[in-house]
Length: 176
Image (cartoon, rainbow, N blue to C red):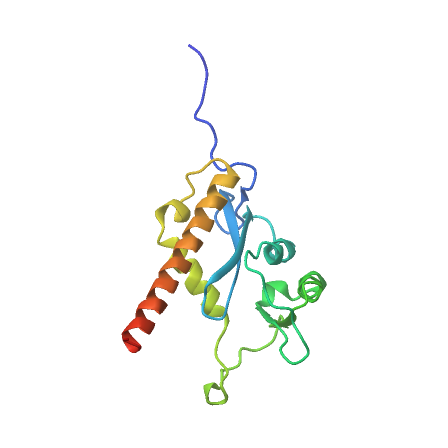
């Protein structure tokens, strides 16, 4: 009787998930605009630290961004996982003004009266939207390029729906 087994799933960009008893998993790193629209995404093994993915994530942005100036700098808001030299250096090299919550810093409430708004939830909301796509929530693809392509397709669908919603709203407000 020949001995063969089901091929392993995941591909090269999977790794042991430190929070899930060492099962293989994939980490998605994404940069979004102020309203949660995905601009760039990369994948890696679940055991890869976020700070190592920041430079690749910033390089994966697919839209051309305007050049930052002194009058209108481009800001990049990051969580405590990027509070190190690597995270700040990657943001500065990409010509962003980094806003990184420091490790040990107490959580401050947001003063919305001055126009400040919470920022991190925007990224989490986009990840939650992507998790509604079953093919992304559970990784069935063995090849990394196929899985990344599926995520990018879902991001393109997000932008299409957003553009469609905005154009319909404009058409309803300005009937000619």
